[in-house]
Amino acid sequence: MAILKIARIGHPYLRKKSVEIEDPTAPEIRELVANMVDTLADAGGVGLAAPQVHEMLRLVIFFVPLASEAADRYHDAGLEDDDEEIALTVLVNPVIEAIGNETEAAYEGCLSIPHMTGEVRRPRHIRYRGLDLDGNVIEREAEGFHARVVQHECDHLDGVLYPQRMDDMSTFGYSDEVQKDDDLPESK
Ligand code: NI
Image 1 (cartoon, rainbow, N blue to C red):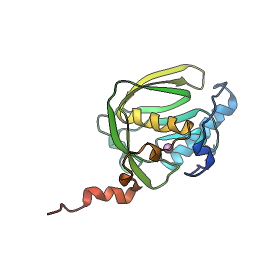
Image 2: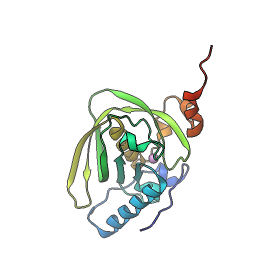
Image 3: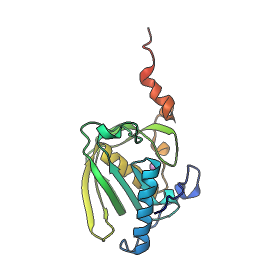
Image 4: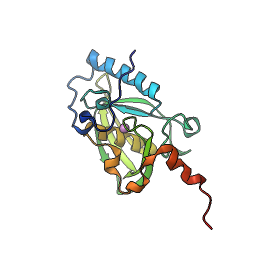
């Protein structure tokens, strides 16, 4: 077990395209994933992409907690009560396609941009495909938070961070400041 160092915004690895993994069953990939799982748990996030831990490989891990269990524990980024729980998933060489034209805006956070959040509009409904560590195909449809976390993590594989997806930079800020929005007294 090892907790890996997480690259922060500005690091060149977060701006570059990662390469496909030739053999998802290789022991070094399994070891990397085990360390990424430990790192994700330690950091208190819901997803992590290999380039965030300085490995330029097309590999992401993520899960979707229940909204009721997520409060304050994760950057819960718009998790709703009706979002389905998704167990920890490892995706090698993932590919995403949007289904339909519907988009949705929600706040996101990123372990590479600590303490910050911002509103990002993304396709609401997607299909994704990738391999697991045994080389089996995983193919799923996803909506809501699940679709968002997969798109966010896969963006890392192309060197894209969520602020690059934002269309209203006025929503970008420190999470604890942005959360004050709800607490402001009504203007009279
Ligand atoms: Ni991220």
